[in-house]
Length: 209
Image 1: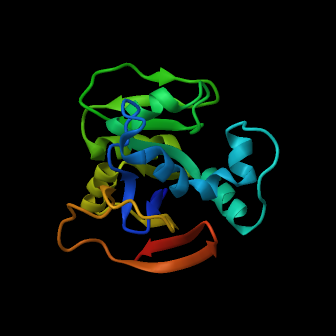
Image 2: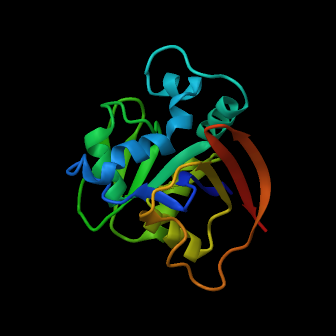
């Protein structure tokens, strides 16, 4: 069976997103600069630039190889409505997933196909149903829970997350959306599987015990 994994960036003080991060409030508490600092490591990578058609250049090496391996293992993505709403405004026409994406939402909406292989499916029946569909789509590849924090917490509470991949950036947000809140006791147990670091981020991989 395919694995379920979380792959996200995280601030040093534990936030996935800065306070007020919405497209409607671009200047609120300087969230754009904070988000840029959080994701600076990925913007430098050659594979990321190729995947988003940002032009030639970019760094190669262990972090770039890590990013490539992570991307190539994904057969389906799951995300929340808040993440989708922000991305719908910000992503290019060829959305950056190239897989089926299952969006947890109360909104009734037909599937939305984008160029490049991304199709968004809007799931009204909860996280377990979304995971069932994602597993079917992924086949032998894995299912990534992309975010946001609330969605990741739901899957951690369901006990179905096999791996956590966290790019821990040396930035402080002070407030925002924390990753590890609202978790039930006892939570899932993980062990450290890999640590890879460079000046822009420490890449941590945890696997479930």
